[in-house]
Amino acid sequence: MKKHLFKLKYIVLGTFLSLASCVNDDLPGVGDLEDFTNPTPFYTVTDVTTSEFDCSDVELWAKYEFNFQAGSNLAVNGTHYDWSVTPSEGVTLINKDLPILKQSIDAELASVVALEKEIAKLEFKIPCEANQDKIDVLEAQIADLQVQLQLAKDEVSEESAQIVAGLETQIDELVDATLQDQELIFSFPEPGEYTVGLTVTDNLGKSAYTEKLITVNQAVPTIAVPEIGEPGFEDNSLFDGSGDGRDSWRAPSSSLWGSVFQINTKSEGILPEGTQAAKFPSDGTRSMYQEIEVTPGATYVLTYFSAFNLDSADGEMTVSVLVPTTGSYTESLLAENIIASRTDTGSGRVADVFKKHAITFEAGDNETVIIYGRNKNDEIRIDSFDIIVKQ
Image (cartoon, rainbow, N blue to C red; front, side, top):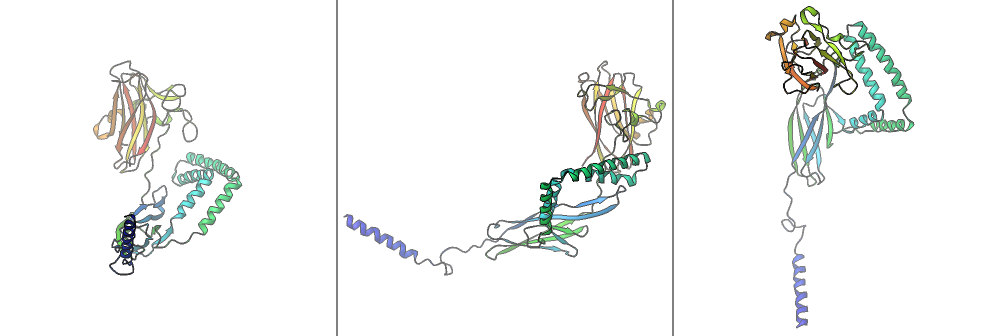
């Protein structure tokens, strides 16, 4: 019986081998099925445009650069990429590794780069500054920073210098970007609309195409953040190292606007900022007034802190943003002169505890606005003004 079973086992095995021998991958329609799947191309794009404007918002230069990275569902199958751009005149290609290498150099020379940027920032301000005292201060600051810059350069270690030299060599030896790179940077000659296409071909020769309309927008200057003088009411915080914390906040006429506030001094760590805050006695005769430059059409968020003494349940503190033609405290109460305003009361407040507030306003057609504040019925302190451009 065992003998017959043994023979049957080999008969079955022989049958399977015979059937397997009939499968031939070289014959059409026999064996493995042909792969009819086409690649599915896609790409991502990131705007990395850079530009520079002078203090009068005149464009000095602009580089309209976009980073493109291709992809495909068949990227593991030896996929090939081929970019196209229309119109192509003036379009140049940049190796994707170039900005990475430049950033690596900046990181290695972080102290030197930081000082160079600070010097450039100050030099940028001088041509449009009309106040000679401010120009003198800026030039003195630049001279001091240039001394620090030379010291920073002298302190660059031999190891860092060798690393930087190696990175610069890599930049010199970078191969030119081509339209067959999976990732590259397109530098467009000017604003406009460009059609960027991508053809993906797999290792079986199958290909597919996709395209997008890329809009290159005109470079625009960054909206400047307004400067608030003595925002934390600290001594010696003016541009030239002077000031008693109130000099930037004095109204043109105390009889029309109210006398400037007093200064309240506390130990470090008690106030939101520094050791001094603006103090408004409960008689309501004190005020704060400062005209600041803004960019027409921009939207801003003004923030500050207040603390109530809570000697009266009717205490109020009003901070307003006024049109620059407002001429007195009485006029500051008129709706047509108020761009934005906020009134806080002592209700629900804890005595001597500072709370942060925000006022959002639009500059409209104004090139300057007035920050004005006045209190009622309670002693109130104000500290740490700040302003940002709302994006």
